[in-house]
Amino acid sequence: MTFDVVGTLIDFEAGLKDCLAGIASEAGVTIDGEEALTLYRQARYSDGADLFPDDLVRVYLAIAPTLGLPAERRYGERLRDSARSWKAFPDSAEALARLARDYRLVAMTNARRWAFDHFAAELGNPFHAAFTADDTGTEKPDPAFFERVFDFVASEGAGREDILHVAQSQYHDIGISRKLGMTNCWIERRHAQKGYGGTIEPAAFTTPDYHFTSMADLADAVATARK
Image 1 (spheres, rainbow, N blue to C red):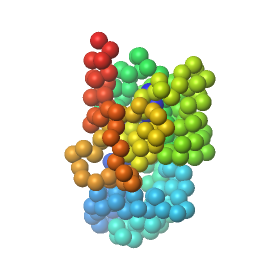
Image 2: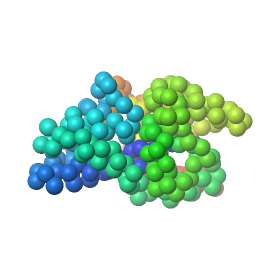
Image 3: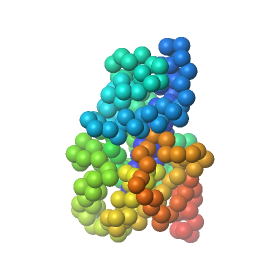
Image 4: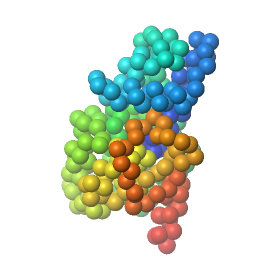
C-alpha cells in the first residue's frame, strides 16, 4: 500500500489554522480558518513555489496582509516550523499499525525529508519505505514521482498492479494514479465540509476504486475482506 501523508494521515489544515490563529491572537486580530486555507491554497499553487513545507515562509508573507497579520519573515518561519508539531488524524496511527501487519506500507509525500521524519514519528514509524520530494526531485502529480516508486516496488518483486494507493487529494493522487493504472482509494477527509480546503481543486473528479471517509474505515474494510 502506498500512502499520501500530508492531508491523508497528517492533519495539515488544522496545523496551519492553529499556527495562524496563534499569530493572529498575538496581533490582536481574529481570522477565519477556512478563509485562511483558501488564501493558502491560492498562494501555495502559484508561480515561484518552493518545496513544502519550506514554501510556507513565502506563502505566509503573501497571505498575511489580507488576513491582517504582521507581514514579517519570522512569522513565516514560525508557520514553516509548525510542521514539526502537526498532529495525525486521530485514526491514522492505529489504522496504519493494523495494515502494517499484512502489507508493506510505503509513504509518498510532497514534503521534504526533514518534515516527513516528524510526520513518520507522529504516526508511529509504520512505513516499510518512504519517498519524499527530496528523494524524487519532483512532486505529485508528476508521473515521475510515481515511476520512482514503481522502480522500488519492482526491486522487491512486485508491480504497480499490486499496489493500492491511498490518498485524500484528487489533484495530487487519485487522478494521476488512475491514469498510471493503479488501484486507488480515496480518503475523503473533508466529507463533512464544503470545498477543497488547503488542497488544489482538480480539473475533473476521478471516481476512485475505493472510497472511505477515514483510515479506520479502510482498515476495517481490509480486515473484513481478509476473513
